[in-house]
Image (cartoon, rainbow, N blue to C red; front, side):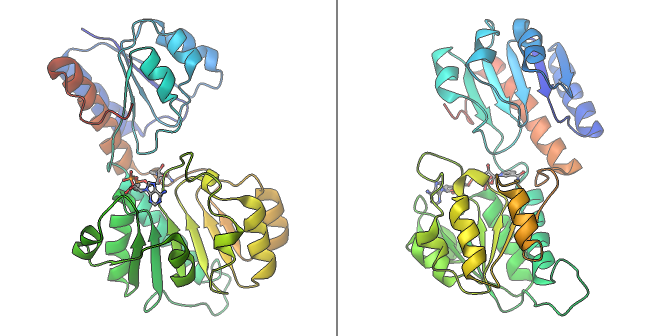
Amino acid sequence: MPKVLIATEKPFAAEAVQLIKAELDKAGYPHAWLENYTDPKDLHAAVADAEALIIRSDIVDEAVFNAAPDLKIVVRAGAGYDNIDLKAATAHNVVAMNTPGQNSNAVAELALAMMIYMARGKFNGKSGTELSGKKLVLYGFGFVARYLAKMAKGVGMEVFAYDPYLSAEIMTKEGVTALHSVEEIFKTGDYISLHIPATAETKKSINWDLLGLVKPACILINTARKEVIDEESLLKAFAEKKKFRYVSDIEPEKHAQLMELYADRYYCTPKKMGAQTEEANINAGVAAARQIVAFFEKGDKTYKVN
Ligand code: NAD
């Protein structure tokens, strides 16, 4: 039976661990656990005899593949898979997968909480504003954005979205108004929430050409990836637009500077915590284990990303 290594620098919640074990035990697959490691060499040693690997935000690069001659499949328990070197995976004949949709509700709830937190001046005791009646624009309309759209409508927001890879009908079906250009996103939103992946196309794409367009009191929410923002332009937005606010689940490179200069209009979670709920851990972890079993038993490659 294929041996599965679960390598998590940031471990799964305890209940998720039990359920993943149960799933692999049911299939009769042996499993090993490497948790809380800090040195990549520990991962290289642990993966040496593994045929399958489950990870979270752990880096899986060429060195990991070189250390894992028997590896057939790596599954990222989560949505973003920019921590896996996909070219190296393919070169080593390893199937890479993610578990789409399994942690999206958790991320959407955090985005909504962040919007309220910023609208209420980081709970500073002074008069704030309400979400109801305001325009929310979702940049990217995948799993997280769709959950957030439902929640935002529930609190009375008007919801818009832009996603060049999806038809306007999909947005209309979800009760969301489709926008037709990136510029429109930045002109329209009282709140703009980012839900795009970090790709060659999107990295640093949110620059001054776009941030210069935002409404004076716009609140920008980032639960996606820090790489999509050009941080020099972000600093310029804070400097030029005195009510502009930015809230993020991923610490920017310029975190210290932002805290020093704009602490009243900026917030970042101390650690990335969008997917950090027991429910999301369980959903993504169990899905990863099931995908591995389905891959070996039935050749199922449904969630392959390379
Ligand atoms: P998803 O794959 O379901 O949706 C991404 C959407 O972005 C897709 O609909 C795609 O068509 C669209 N897209 C791709 N390139 C685009 C472009 N250039 N312009 C506009 N749209 C584009 O992903 P998701 O699960 O909704 O996750 C969204 C983002 O959130 C990803 O960056 C993911 O890595 C991140 N994420 C963060 C956390 C966290 O812990 N903070 C957890 C899960 C996901």
